[in-house]
Amino acid sequence: MKDEIKILRIEALHESCWTEKTDNFDVKVQTIYEDFPNMEVYNSQLLVWGKDSKKFIKMIKSNVYIVNTFGEELKLINCICRRDNTISDIVKKYQGTILSQYNFEGTEYWKILIKNNVIDKFRERLEEISHIKGFQVTDLTSFSPFPELTNIQKKIIIKAFSKGYYSFPKNANAREISKELGISPVTFIYHLRKAERNIIKHYLNNAW
Figure (cartoon, one colour):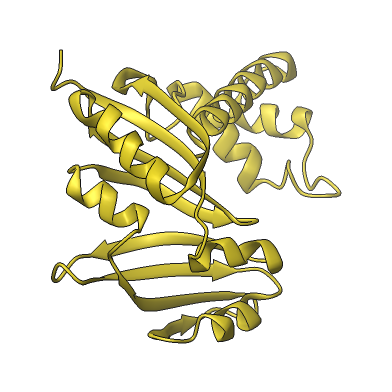
């Protein structure tokens, strides 16, 4: 169906944009929110973290102000950006919905929802302003906002985490936690490994 919604994953190098500057700093920039008040500019709220976050923000300080600071390496900023020749503007014009977007080592990573019948035109426009490193289209059924865990898997991994099973050194071992849950250590390990596998699989499928 032409109007079918797809998930589009993009990796792009956007020259002459502040995002390419992330290659020169030890930072990662995550888009939290975008608003388009008019046809000229858009407002973007960004989470910037890394040991060079302060230097990076100083470099892009034009039209940027810090909303909150969470220690030396984590900052929430608002910035006003021109819309022309930006990927954000293309996403807006083709009525895409951003699921996630971040910038790291000079590359923009996008995951958006978009209608199937505009993907070709979207890509053509994207190629005009950036170098595309990755462009993947998948069905909406491949996306899940949460890992699929059974009730017992949830119960066991929450208990393991709260008891310090993942601390180093461990604050509790499998035998101690399984006894508290009223199950055998073998059953505990079985469900815990299944939960871990599902969480890792979900992360790898939906990381960007």
